[in-house]
Image 1 (cartoon, rainbow, N blue to C red):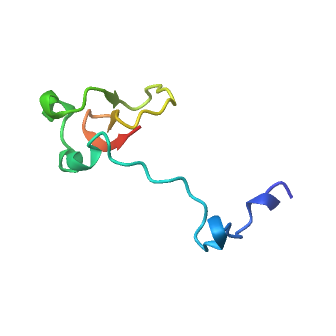
Image 2: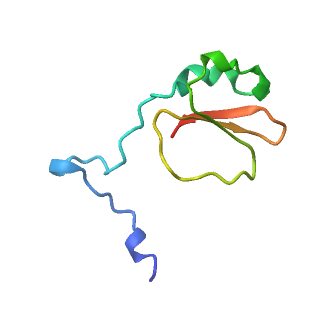
Image 3: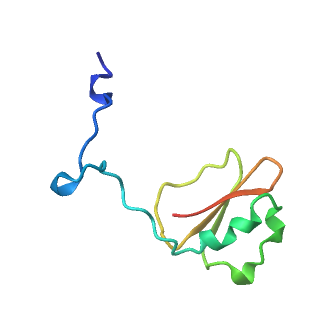
Length: 89
């Protein structure tokens, strides 16, 4: 009963648009998209001169704040210190 609100029904967007209401996509203001080729490499491979001013490197288990900054580049590392994901926020 508690899950009744989680049914498979689809909400519609503005004006009856059949697509669901989703948060708008975050623009790539931090340049994360151009770094995809670095995935799998050690974090030391990043050349700081080509990065935005604000970079947050996140290791497994790190506590991170939930504040949002579209210009901040986040770099997720795996347990071995290799980069696995780049995202703005």
